[in-house]
Image (cartoon, rainbow, N blue to C red; front, top):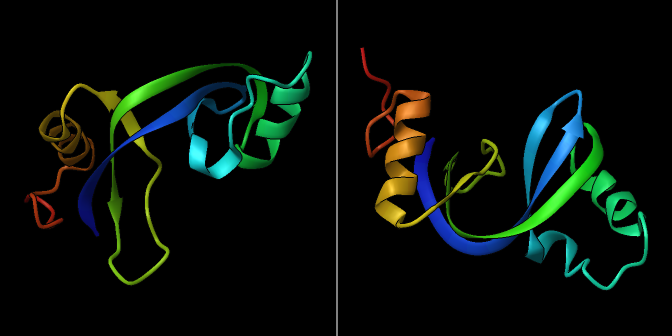
Length: 103
């Protein structure tokens, strides 16, 4: 899998049991118009834990992705630049720019 970076808007979702998870706007849409806990209910289908809070965020996100396949890691971010995002995901997974593991 190789590191990839994208700039987008997302929700940082705090969940019970899993911690923080990132849900891109293009996956769930703009939830700011929903009343009460409806946004948390909507986010529940996109996260592993039980959503207990969220905030909109924007910036550069990175993850490892298998080109031509659906396999990928969770998004990491946001970061100020694409280079920072890629550096963070390479450090997290201990890989180089081509996705090769360091020994």
